[in-house]
Length: 334
Image 1 (cartoon, rainbow, N blue to C red):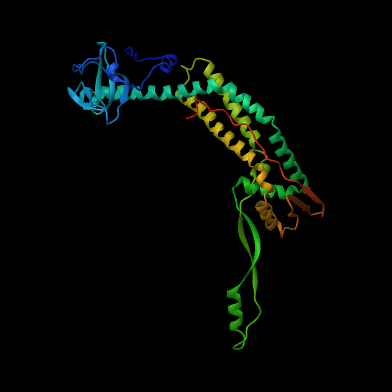
Image 2 (cartoon, rainbow, N blue to C red; image 1 turned 180 degrees about the vertical axis):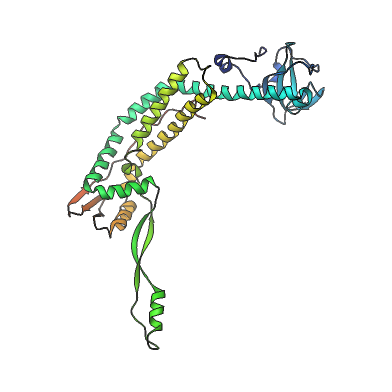
């Protein structure tokens, strides 16, 4: 590897290895102690395993370390120096060199991730298009529409519980032993009254098959958000990035990576939509709506029966199994 310039373009930086696997293979490697008055520049860093021999340190003039830097200066030679010996040998000037090196490492990492995203963008967008037009998502959309038409109130209440990740509750009667005790204290000895009951909300778990109950942040929305983030990253990656600060590049990369994870999760959620019609979930919905004045949800075999406040009865049949493509692995995802 040639001596690195202090100012690298993004194209040069992308092609540069800042993590050096074999520091002893560096060209123009000197074992002499470099002049501390010549400003050091870090070419790269290395981290060897403890099972490997210790390397020569130009400062210590001995084989003392496993972790360190390849440095150079205006003389053109390369030197190996331990990570703790750099500041001892050069003082403040090494701190400046280390800070510059860390900035390069950070920018190169973001550039590598952006490059990986751009390399896989078209394949990812093709898969997004396939999922958006899949029969599976159409079936979920249709079933969601059936639920809304049957009872918009029931759908809205369940959608809120999914959005807020809240439990469903049922109203149950429980003995009010304290009230019974206080009442019996006022009765003649050896007498007691009938049981006293009170209603109490009891948790019965969360809704299953949540994809059916998502309107604004369903799989379609997540996939479209991911595609937009991909397209913005592609525009950024196709041009010269040198004039863009690291924050702009990082935000674009993170937007894609986060949208990728959210889209993948939404695909899995969509495939689990048929669980809404599972016997356990239908039983949960029946118990949850048992005391509601505006709608009742009951099960009839594998079907969900929705009766609204006008006593109109809707039969909603279950979803078939749903299988959707997975997004390809994203090289830029880190």
